[in-house]
Length: 328
Ligand code: UT7
Image 1 (spheres, helix red, strand yellow):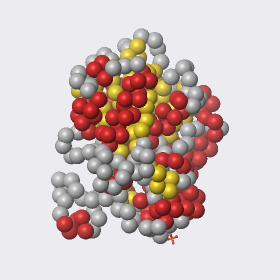
Image 2 (tube, protein in one colour):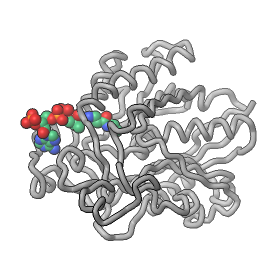
Image 3 (cartoon, helix red, strand yellow):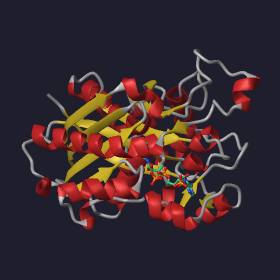
Image 4 (cartoon, helix red, strand yellow):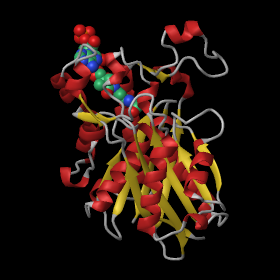
């Protein structure tokens, strides 16, 4: 059986920095509240009405990942694009990205699993690669969430950011790479974090637009409690499957939903700060892009080296939660 490895990473965020003080000019919030309750200081948003979609951010991240991997776009056999804010309902953002980077030999499709999207995408890619069907794959997580937010709702507008992260994976004969992935879901709780209208069940109408039903709605405190529990379950599944204790981890890259959630999981695992990647202060919650952006920053900073044991874990809308263990 071949061993899929991540051989190059990349990222891109919009230039436009939006601070908590910027948001305090339009909604009833303060820099202090947002920092203390979430850990977020600022986020990046595309310029309004700029026409920039997740495939544009992903193009830059993908070109960086391809460059770092030393792989040409025409060598890519599959593109998996994880997003909950696709450029359009049709076609997939994966197909748009395929054209933008010239990956003419690649199959392409999107994966929708909200904040767990990247880990769900990694598991999809792992399966295709371990069966030998595809050997060189591009996996991206990219979101333009700023266009899906009700900017009058202080409970959501302060949380989310735009961005993209990308990984190039290649099969090799040397044991290691993706050791395991674990995916979970509970659709019975889908209304805890959802966009009520805009799909086939409740198509866009003037009335629904007026009621802001096309934007994300969230029951934050419920999600917080469920999130900590599910995060820990996903982590436990990865450690138990591989017969590892938390001390064996060299780097933990959690989904960046809330710094307080990350701290609680970190405490449970007993991990020092040096082993936990946190960048929510600069980007907010970029949903499917948060793990690949954090992963790229950890690799670039030398926090992940050849042989490092890396744990990814996520939790989000669906509800979904997931983990992956990697020997780098
Ligand atoms: O990535 C996907 C998964 N997402 C998550 O896991 C998010 C999980 N949830 C959270 O991170 C937190 O629940 C939030 C950050 C969303 C909210 O923090 P919280 O500590 O749970 O606050 P809360 O919703 O219980 O609200 C406390 C107070 C309320 O006021 P009252 O009723 O006590 O007067 C809110 O209205 O804070 C108020 N509030 C705000 N105040 C200033 C809510 N949002 C804001 C705001 N600025 N932006």
